[in-house]
Length: 386
Ligand code: HEC
Ligand SMILES: [Cu+2]
Image (cartoon, rainbow, N blue to C red):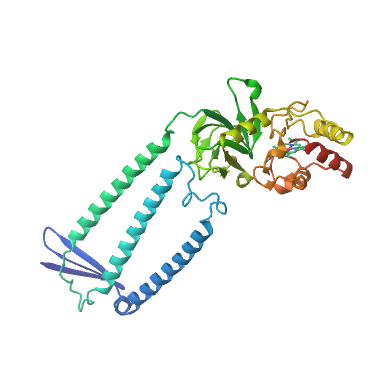
């Protein structure tokens, strides 16, 4: 056994060992290391750990209390899943959270034990004897490898289980993402007269898998209804597919989840799940064109619309046939406007038309100046878009 010590300034490097194995440690003098370990380090660490744990627990408890209500936290996919495409991933999330929590607790406990059972500081520059402990390394590596492999298998099984619905979807809806709203096309292959387009509100029948075809009109967006399924990108020039299914009637909020520009955060939509009869009635109502305008104010509003809005917007059954903006034929039937930015009231409609650039700066709808008379006429016309 040989032992060498090398000092440079405040640092001492000590090595010992024979021909086959050399051990070295470094000590820094003046750093207060020895004194520090005696009391300060364990007490300080314990205080920090208690503080961090207490804060984390408080924040988590508040978050959970807040998010327990699915309506209050519509994007919370960790606590809420409303269909078979979402539930397996929710359980996977719980399992992975449990795994990482267990790892954190085990590491913290081992650290506390190590601090409590620390060795007495070396009396001299001589290295203390090697006390073994390699079996801890073997056990730790083995347990981690098994746990990680188990997590991998569970992830692959989950991916497979949500890849396709248990039965072929009877209904396909084509969704196209635009800066910064969603076009929704319903097609009836048996009867094209029943085809129609709407915006930002997708209706589906409850308890049936529905296929969603995803396109983009401009940049990459991502379609995400957290409580119904995972995210799928919409990519220019490609058609991606996803399926969703809702177990219970309700309104499920969706959100673009791929940063796509200034109004990315205001690119929301809603999925309305309702029973078959209500869904069929909604489809028939949506497919109907706009009835011809009656009454002087409404006719004035219709003329204004054709002059100032029809370049972008469509109202089926009228000459207005713009293709770059939401179809407004049944505007009043929707719960929200401007991709979830405002609730759909007559006041909000006018506010939006006059101040679109204030409500969604850099959005592709201009703010349109209207005098009081024009506003009244337009409001009367918009009220007919039932
Ligand atoms: C230059 C094209 C353009 C013109 C002109 C235009 N709009 Fe728009 N409009 C849009 C776009 C794009 C959106 C979607 C904006 C968004 O949500 O980011 C929109 C959204 C809307 C919405 C919300 C629809 C929904 O369901 O979310 C209403 C209502 C609307 N416009 C009414 C009008 C009216 C009324 C006029 C004429 C006075 C008009 N627009 C003129 C492009 C236009
Ligand atoms: Cu987007």
